[in-house]
Amino acid sequence: MNMKQLCAKEALKYIKDGMCIGLGGGSTIGYLAEYLAKEERKITVVTPSDDTAELCKNLGLMVLSLEMTDYIDIAFDGCDELDKELNALKANSAIHTKEKIIASMAEKYVLLIDESKFYDTLPLKDSVTLEVIPQSRNYVQAQIEKLGGKAVMRKSGAKAGFVISDNGNYIMDTDFSNVAAFAGKPEELHQKLKQLTGVVETALFIDVVAFALRVCGDEVKVIEK
Image (cartoon, rainbow, N blue to C red):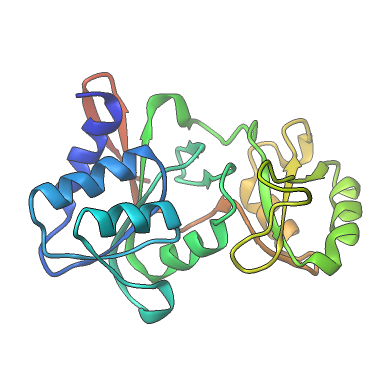
């Protein structure tokens, strides 16, 4: 059993029949879905990920669309960076707005990580991804530069042009890794970015994570504040 499978297996302990659960994206979540199907758990799944939704349906799990619910018992997802205060950065997807909706609906929002993604404070070495209304693109880029960061539009590898979110907005990748003013201050950076007109949401998850399951070698540790 690899580290991701070990983490997914531990997550099973928090899921009971009758629950509505949130499942994010990625291979660890994929393992969790497979375990749920294998044990024939009687649960309903809500997910921001088309890939996860397709996998769950193929496994015979009941999938409910996000707009059809307002409450989730517990939700699981991964991240790129997590600190001791349970602040997280989810940089590589373009679905972080929907992920935050699920996190807000969930009684508990739980992250599944390996030890390589855990830090004392977020280093922000990954992109602080933004979902941006198209008409605000140039304005937001200019404001990012005033804050000391760098911003580039994420381009699609499947077609010419920019990556478009499920909500019809642009995805902008920003770099604040060398901006001393925000070192160790992800909450402040999140607030500054959210205040920019046209920014729908950031990939910084502040004060939403209940706890995390962190794989260390052959054991899983619970990380709480």
